[in-house]
Length: 260
Image (cartoon, rainbow, N blue to C red; front, side, top):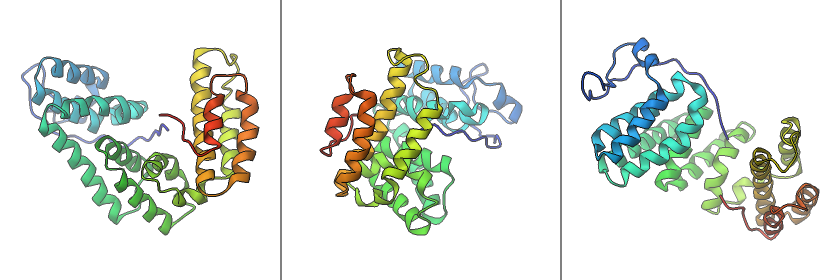
């Protein structure tokens, strides 16, 4: 899932790396002048140069500022950038400490307040990277207890953690034929197959759709709702019956989740 929000840009002060390579700024204008993509590239280059402290500062800056400057970078921030930062953390303990602090700070916020969706997405990404999936399950369960209907948008983010922790029962209110219809409607409205199902772009989009549906099919099996599972699987199978993806759906019908 990709979530796009625009937040007011705030200023942070980071360690200076020198006159021409500093991320320490004191104005919104300075922050906006920086190119997040270039900063991320420099962070990874610093790892190769064994400049771990410099790399860590740049990753911190990217996490804090990239999506504020360019909201469409939220997906990169939560996936590729975090993956690269974790690769630094494997070599440089201060980076791991920084990532853990971000996760624990968000955990504290969400333990006391109903989180914004972007906050929850950030928390999910950090928790997943650190292997703290149970934290996400616990927070999501508290959201469900407070407002089950309001928790629906959070389920798509939390589902991978719930599955990893085998918390299948809490998924029960968010799966079924009605939920499948919403997924299918989004798929149909997106004109995904307008270039033909054999194009590489459509193959990726089709797989993403199939993966989401197959996950629901498998969850229904684990919640003893086989009739609904079969109904959804059979309707979806018609789209994939002649593709290499059909086995994913067949596996889902016996409770096997699709690969990541």
